[in-house]
Structure formats: C-alpha cells, structure tokens
Length: 366
Image 1 (spheres, one colour):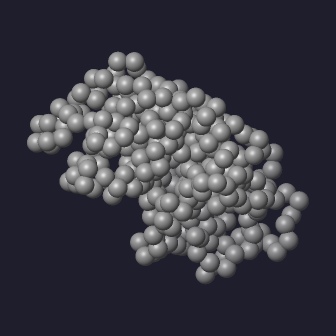
Image 2: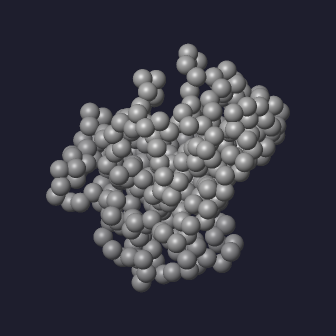
Image 3: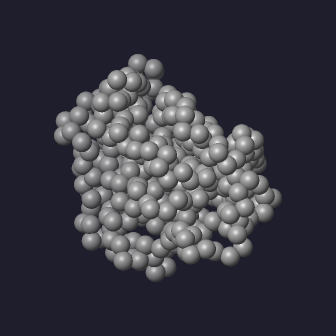
C-alpha cells in the first residue's frame, strides 16, 4: 500500500475468476472460491485506504455479471461508481472489449461529476464510428529497415517455434469436432487443407515449426474465413488473408483466429497469413495504439510477455480522460500548471515520461 494519498488510481485485478474460458465462472460460489478472487476485494481495499479522488478499474467483459455488485461495494465506501464496456475495434484493428469501472470520491465531488464522465465516454465511443483506425498494414515493419532486420534475425534465432498448445491430444479432438460441425452445416470444404496443401506453394511460415498441430491451426483459420464470408479459397485468397490472424499458441477449441488482432496473452504468437510470418511484439504494440514502443534491451520473448500484460492504449486513454474530465471542475489540484514533487510519473512505450496535467475539455483522445 502507498504511504501517500494518490489523486488518481488506475487499477486492475485478475480476470481468471470471471473468464468464460473457465468452467464455473458463472457460478458465484465457484468464483469466490477461486484463488485469485481475494485480489478483487484487495483492489477495493486499496481505494478505501488511500482515498484517491478518482479511481479507474479495468477488467474483461464477463465481469459485467458482477460489475453492479462491485460498484455497490464502492458506493458503500462513499464513492460514486458506475461502469461501461469500451469496444476495442473502434480504436484498433482487433477484438477484446474491456470493462471499466469509474469511481469518484463522493465526499469531494457531486454525483454530476460521474454523470459527466459517463457522458463524455459514451460520446467519444459513439463518435469513433466516423473515424476508423489507420489501415492495418501501416503498423507492420517495412522490409529493409533496421527494425525489420532485427525481427528477421530474431525469427532465424528461434529456428522455428513449435508453439505447442496445452494438451497433446486435445487439439486433434477439437479440430475433428470443428470440422464435423462445418460438415453438418453443409460446408463443402469442411475436410480441406487449403493453406498448407493448396494449389500454391507451401507457405514458409517464418518463425514457426510446421508441426501437425500448427498446420491444422493454419488450415482451420483459413477455412473459418471462408466459412464466415462465403468466399472461395482460391479465387478470393488475397481478400481472405488480409487482416486474418491466428494465435498459434492456442488449440482449435479456443477458435484462436480473427479478422484483426484478438486480445493477446503472454504466451501468444500471432501469425499473419498475408505476410506469411509471425508478427513481432513491436508490431503488436503499434496495433494496440502505442505509436513508437521502446523495447530496446528486451528479447522477443520478454517483449511478448510485456505486450501480453498490456492493453490497447486508446480505449484506456478515453476511460481515463473521461474520468478526469468529470472530476476537473471539482478538484483544481488535478490541474496545477506546475507539477508537484509528489506527482507520479509513468514511463510508457512511445509516450516518454508523462503526468496528469491541464487539458482542454475540447481535446478528444485519439
């Protein structure tokens, strides 16, 4: 616990008790028995003991089943609290919506401050439909550049990553079940292997060892794109592979393929059909909204650990700016022109050292 009272607290707590990927996540008793559940209560205790003016909590969308109760616990501790889900794909090319809980100290600000926060967040999110993200290919490394050469050297040093999923035999059963499902729905290509055994030359899959499991994952991902779009795997190949990514660290049962980048984990390895290679952690950071991630001194594995623990920057910025905008008229200490000695600073990739400071209410996060 910090010794000083913070002005703003941005917190997270483990998502595992609430994840739909876990059996029992919809059973409240099972959730409370999970070993990580006490850390949810610890996050509330942190706010209760340090009494920040504003607090922002981040978690996965299945936490919505418990979000109102969580807000109720904050209200019992004299905080105005409410929550919103921010849609990942409005800001970046990917999936993985996030749930944010907004809390403002009821002893220091009126209820209207939280209403202003929610209004701002809702308006910013609604406006994003008019401003799609930059083209996805603009985030990839350019061949011939220093960063490109470093990534190629990294892939060569790996010697072809096996990317083994959990459960040696589970992937075979899961793949068979998925193909049988497609067959039952009349999908003519249900048994095809159009990516690894198609009419074109075998892909090189730089950065991967083409084990049977990886081959099956790549074929299933390509078939999934055909299935959902109704396109032909040969005639429409170029259109199908654009922006299509499987996470080859996962087994078929997780359906780890998506148009745009799905939420990555620390052990994720993401393959690009269009570029026929594993993406670098640097590229994933850029897709997540970090303009110029600083990863010097990290191995590729360490960088993936870092990006797996991170989140898309623009939705987080919207949530945080909305919270501060609601608090601003009632808490002048947040907007001092000169930084105080106790101001907390953060070093983040691409943004340098920054602090919370004056901001016009007309400025909208990118």
